[in-house]
Length: 389
Image (tube, rainbow, N blue to C red; front, side, top):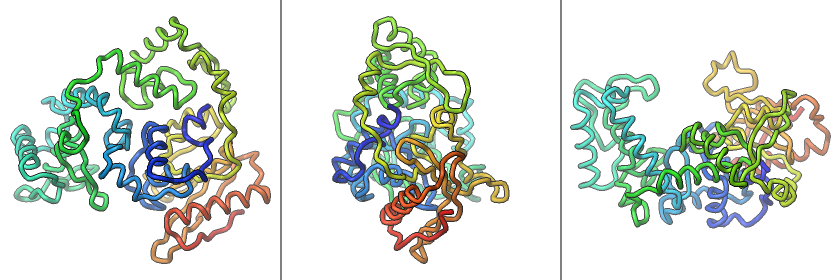
């Protein structure tokens, strides 16, 4: 059920049209955006692991031309379906209340007069059209240093804040730099100035989460889109059980712990019967793949402990910088640390580790080789190299 909700039971050889890319994002609910390019950017790797013929230009067209998708925040920067935009009004409102609060830590990054800066930045975008950080001058004496954005201009924080609050949208990216414009000029109308009511929003958030998770606790439902409080998700589960829509279930724990209480749709048995078997192939899942996002759930469901070590000092890394998980059919069987050497056109396999009990048979090695062939083709590498022992 979980693999089905994550788009991993469909045939990845199906035509990778622009419509198929759009449907894949909609089926997943969100695709995380990340800047790291050790192999390729996360959003391209996520979609490429589900569509063999995926082309990045199709995603760009859907975002910047068709406007069928837009970029905003879930648990992190993500690409989401534009039909969900009305539900983001709730997020915009809460962001405004939090980010514009006099006590919020971002205010110091906006300089001595935050309200004036925000008004000036919004006025410039309104009058001049799409702008990015480089279109704004640094303050006299240079920008102050910040721990995670270096010496970022106050205008950069203002642009981001107005984006989080729903005044701006990302109209395109130049390279990987965000270009901002007014939300109403960027995304198709009617512009959702009035949100769905709270009850509808809660039902939408929990229902969409459960469709993709298959079974979940209230905490997992709330955290899927980070759209509703955990307490509200718990109340929704209780009300849905009372109405007969959900049933309480106990989920076996692959790590050996006691079964975990959760909830599923009342017709979960039918849903299980309808799920097709996952293709017998090895897929390489990037660190930000939605299947791996909830690390604790990954342990409970697959017995697979995963940690992104990109921010760990090199000498302390156990598995590597940008470790990709190996999904063989319905089982996570290993992990691989790759790097794309663009100067040589080679996808390098620097380290490979098979999970305990996952014998690297000749058949499994061939599946991994074919998986590496597909990944190399997707990212534009001429070949891959490295030992698979």
